[in-house]
Amino acid sequence: HKEYHKQRTWIDRLFKRKGSSLYAVDDVSFSLQEGETLGLVGESGCGKSTLSRAIMRLYEPTGGTIRFLGEDITSYEQRKMRHMRKNMQMVFQDPYSSLNPRMTVKEMLAETIRFHQICQNDKELNEYIDYLLVRVGLNANDASRYPKAFSGGQRQRLCIARAISVKPKLLIADEPVSALDVSVQAHILNLLEDLKKEFQLSLIFISHDLSVVKYISDRVAVMYLGRIVEIGNSNEIFENPVHPYTQALLSAVPRFDVDQGKREKIALEGDPPSPYEKHTGCPFYSRCPKRMNICESMAPSFYATGATHLIRCHLAAEVGYQ
Ligand code: SF4
Ligand code: MG
Image (cartoon, rainbow, N blue to C red; front, side):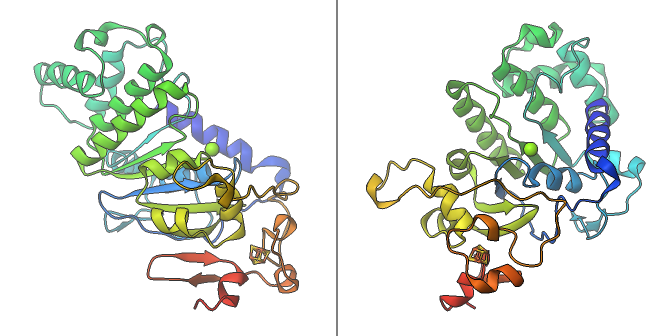
């Protein structure tokens, strides 16, 4: 599909910069259950999008394994992968650029539905397109219109309709509401939430906006410089963040359920270091308000505070977690 091709070209360009190699995503490991939503958060450039595109095999990871529906898809050839993508769909941040302006809504949806052979005949196809449009909150007679006739929120609904049209098992939504007006964001989030339940979708929801992630996620993974630094159930992460980076991110989110005074905003110094640099110690060292001597020379591994809460920080060891 065209949008995938576009993404691939963009990624190739990004990684071949100056001939140097860059571990945009490194040592990341997690699993996702059926019907579960994982929120992936972190500042822009931390590797969230790269990770999701690696899962989709939109670019080739240099190492590691991607297992999906019980199969190792890491070395699937692209032809086989195109068919596998029936089960894994993506919705991007910018609904404008992921819709072909020269195709009507019907043509666009039909292209995807036909490729994956979802419908038996044209009659079924037409009915299915009508159903999809209504299901995502549009009208059946929108099928003959072009993308330019729709607002930003409506275009994102179209992208969602296209993604769910093939009945995927996994939906990756990469900043799906970040380009939309705040008033529209909640509608799109509700739609995703409804569809997730109805279709038993597993959802990877990528955002830099923690309040959005909190609303929709069962589990949350926080990324910094290409690594997951903390992962756990949504409640644990939001109520008891342990990694200093997670604490800093959360301190910037206004809370309405507790006394505002209880949580002081933690300002981080500087920018994340260049991903081209090699780190021996903790990647967060240069900005960490709680750094210790050991952090400069020794990279922390994961410590667990429970069955599901993992933190990549020496402090988690210090305070007695194991
Ligand atoms: Fe900060 Fe050290 Fe923890 Fe890294 S390991 S986040 S530098 S306290
Ligand atoms: Mg991104």
